Length: 135
Image (cartoon, rainbow, N blue to C red; front, top):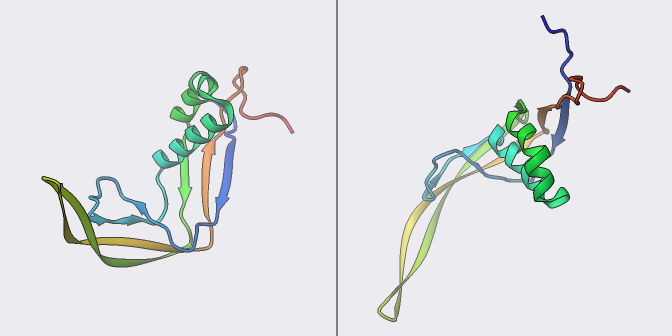
């Protein structure tokens, strides 16, 4: 049995007044909202931030393998209110030099969170197999 203690990074986020984290496979005409982002969204955010700070080579060689394998857990906000929006959408079509406008009804959900959301990411082990650095 391996008695290595797990080490986790935790970050608390206060979400904006209203937000919309769309569920997977939602259409653009009917976007359902999730109360918090999923693990894949957290991984993509870590990759994007890594690219902005360290560049492509460091992310590709060092960070990406860890981000891909890391366990990600999300504690959603304590309370989330959902509101459904019914909107009128317009689309411009160019046909034979003429512009015409079509319209349709779009259903959109927005969320408003009370309290914070916490994201937990497992800290990678160092070269010796230990997790994290000693305090």
